[in-house]
Picture 1: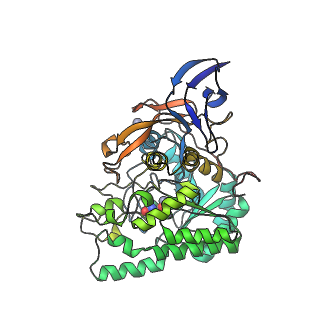
Picture 2: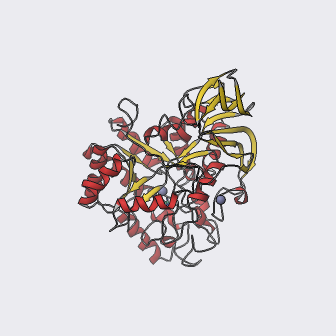
Picture 3: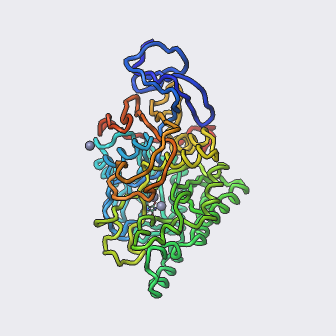
Length: 475
Ligand code: URP
Ligand code: ZN
Ligand code: ZN
Ligand code: ZN
């Protein structure tokens, strides 16, 4: 019984159980859980620490090219697969699922090939791709999507807003239908495009262009309507749907009502809806732009509703929606510091801070038990996106993707300590309790006590398929 590595003396937690066990790893896989496992080339002492499945950040944007009419407004993304995956791993995340974006006029296959070129050889941890469809031509619906889904792309995002991305209701129905038949989960960005355009025009005509008006231009009702419509479309198409980045009460109520009538709807939220608010958007000197994402952070009442949804299981997925734009150069304010909110790149960085924020403010405050934290941080995403049980749990046969957390470590977040290529974090100065100190991907230590020991290029592409029937998720 010889192992490559044994993680000894820690407390292991999965989405269902917490127990004391040593973890034996051979050939990148967990091959034993127990005590007195035998000898190993290397022992990591985890006494006093938590041994958790590595995080899965199932919604992040990396190396998306510039284009007008997107959330970016044409700005350049600061993180590629190298810096993005590096940042992820230092925050305890060992799987990332960014997007391969189809631009109008482009084939989805060409988009996927492009993103493979961007990622290949660069990532520190394993990655998959969600597809984004912005141009559902007959060719895309009848040939490309079914073939790609069969080849390991088991999730497809569609947009109800953004000039260059949005689909009509009818197009969304088409994509829902193809996805359901072919075996992909549809993810939807639910905000009402026409309402946002109308409100933006009115605000700008009144000279209300500061970052704080971003929230007035896409208020909760606009998200509520789109959330309800998206759910309706999924009912009409009889297709599974996941609502991404849910920001507050009204959208949460639509999801609860849908589930009450028996509709299988999945939901995601993000740290920005728990930790940022309209107050941050109102910071002077355009600093509000640092917290500008869509949907926008809401008021404290909405924050409390999102917390409630995290605690009671309304939310399946907790991801960063990392969308990395620098503040000082050619990013957030690429059209100059006096531009209207409507020209500021949408999105904030968060790959590295996602899990530690939830751990500190969820687990250490007693709001979440450790098992629900693991579910939100990792297991649920593995199940919904076709990676379970290879990823998302600590079990014999699973990949040894493990984050060893020191639950007592106090960390003051500063941008200087983070590994992304963005020049700010919206969480600067926040003091957290608990941080991942050693992170492994397929049995390889990637970072240890703040030091990088892994290699770019270790990360592999992950094919993902529809969960098996009876997997207690969507099928
Ligand atoms: O503001 C955001 N969320 N930007 C990223 C793009 C998206 O819609 O997820
Ligand atoms: Zn979105
Ligand atoms: Zn996003
Ligand atoms: Zn490097």
